[in-house]
Length: 185
Image (cartoon, rainbow, N blue to C red; front, side):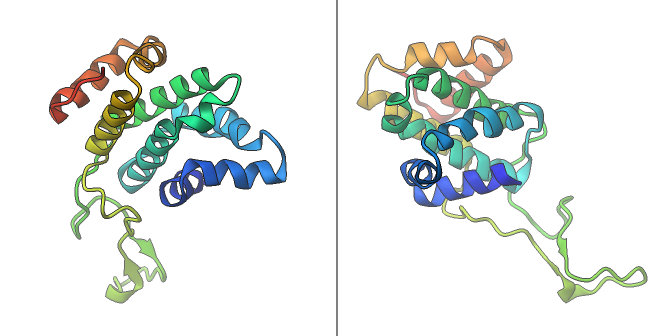
């Protein structure tokens, strides 16, 4: 739950703001939470549907706001781990970013649970906080393409480092860019 908040906050207010807020409490807290809480949770518990979209948008903003990570001594390793986590979410077979409708298999949030009848107004569908982003996979691809184009030669080695642990992730990453019609410089 806390990692959903991290991703939502970063998606709405940028990574620099997130880091500044946490570092005002304790220096280094933002990067520590990223490495020791957020990324490990995504390695073990891959989110689905709206939660997956929120995670992809948040982690994409983390990856593309490189001045924060690259100023940290372990920034390149953190960047690679964040890339691995977001690619794992995007390529997971359980992740579905499709439109939510009434016949969806996602349970609606229940305000009242009557065992004998379904109350129409007691349920509400999950809200999409990033409704302006139709396809988070394309958002990831376009954002990384823009980042790599603005810093030629800097990120291909970090991308390779982040995805070398799992050949399926590398193949999935390449597939994302092929579908988007983009390439990493």
